[in-house]
Length: 61
Image 1 (cartoon, rainbow, N blue to C red):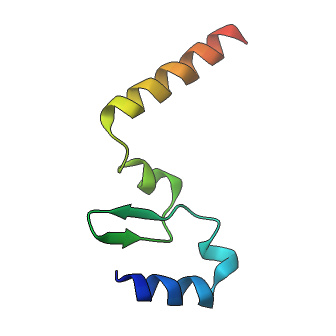
Image 2 (spheres, helix red, strand yellow):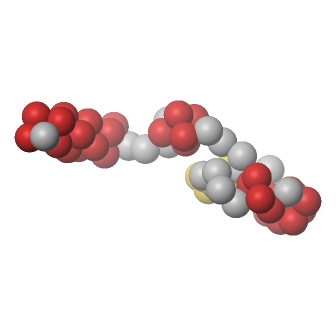
Image 3 (cartoon, rainbow, N blue to C red):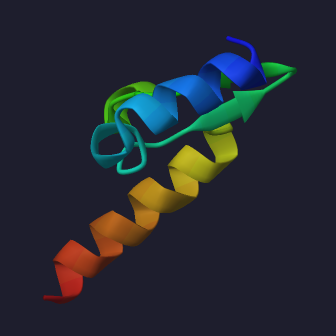
């Protein structure tokens, strides 16, 4: 998606598109993604850290 298309999309439905993650990756823009879809763009190392933090938090509460 081109940046101009993204701007048009956001301006058309700002209440929907500004709440959801907007991913910019290698000259591409991915708006209107679910949180699960956006997670695919995280590096594996970050996913591991996040999982461990969540697991540790559950163990201490």
